[in-house]
Image (cartoon, rainbow, N blue to C red; front, side, top):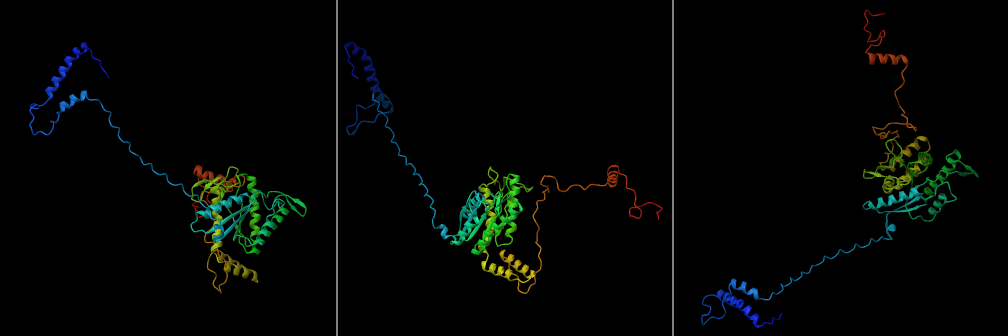
Length: 410
């Protein structure tokens, strides 16, 4: 900034300049004018001089601190996408095929999830189900014919699982006439179709696991499916097909349909979907657990010994020998030791009976208690009331130990 000083301005600034010079002279150290000759520099200024000189120094901006460069942490690399091995199914030691309707689709998904969780399980599961199919509507999908064709062409599976019957509450054509669902002609024709499937797998030498149907939310549908389960169970007794009953796994303590229940870990879970028919993921895993028990038994049991036991049944001459051969087949199927040669067959009783909950109450189909207090005849009821309510002893009976009358009556 430039300042133009006139004569009048110089007169006004003169006292200020004189005061400044006097203050500067006062701050100088004594003897500063007479510095020694060997002095090499100016004496350092005192703190007071520094404070005074700062008044006339141009203020300089403080240096801006250098910005520290921050190292941004590197983002973790994205995980590599999982790759499914296309040859995994071919490399599996055991291949399982699941056939049936929409319930079989749930079951197959449960088996796939279960096999993936098992460590070291080289088991591949393929689901070949048809949602709306059954054994009745062969015009829509003929399961006996299609399974026979699959078994005739080099099947790509070692064990078959079949669950079917959900859509079979329909009229069936028998000898050109329509048979009502679950009528006697209907049962006979339905049973023959079961026999055809069982025989096809027996001829192919491939084990078949037939899974029963679970209860349904609709009581009428549940009753009909229970009857279909009974037909299937009765027919399969004559064959080598393994029947797995899953009904008890989806009912409450009163043997009635329950949408919830314990899962495989024992925790309460929802087992059924909102339609009251199909299975949730937890329900499918529970159903698959029952089937997996039979699958592991088929994998570990020696098939040659089973074939020998089956041949012994066919060669049996009388009923006693046939029963003994059947018992041997059962023992070997369960992994027990075979009977020692020369031992006679003796009937065995199960070491334990059926497991029943202690709090179970038996009720009829209408919800009425099956057992109650037995009715009393009027005479007995009157005596009981007098003894328990009034405290009156019943009349003595002659000749009985509690007859204390004296003298004794003859």
